[in-house]
Length: 269
Image (tube, rainbow, N blue to C red; front, side, top):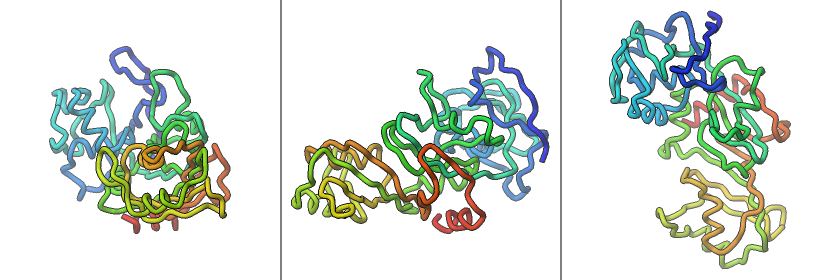
């Protein structure tokens, strides 16, 4: 695999060290993938997800062959010159899959303008390829987080159609009443619609500790479910994600997925 090109940050590029994309000597994706939608191309470069890439394009941060493009659906060819924030970007040829047990007080984002620690900070110097998180975990939420440069897989894992299963351990400030337990199991009406859960159970017999299994991906959904009933979530930990568990993965650590786990992930989608 060709080595990364050394590039110097300039004021025009606007890149932080963590945000700088992977630069390869040539585009190496298979011919059958071309032409490719621009937002998909950006995702394959390991910068962000397709959805985020579409927003970057609409914001005018991308050019193709020297022309600013604001339509994410524009198709590009292997030899097109694509830039993001003033720097040429090329797709990754080697897909990387990282499973992290995210600690508390870490931001699930590529960069933070307030200087707070991000999940990518935890990878510094350990992963050469540019990866980004699939989905989000709140700053105060711990547990399993997948990071990858596989834009196709990230898109599928995030899509509600695939119903990717997530299980959280929830600790409340007080015991959960049986009537509230039943209300959650039946599905609560929140401000953005009904919150359907796949399963809920008391965790190891403790009435203030719950396991909750969901596949919906609405923002802060687990916390909002309990807040709707007057409970405060004092700890939230994702213990299962798309067939992956935290076994032998201490808090704050990460590891590459095995080949078998990658196949399993793709099977989920």
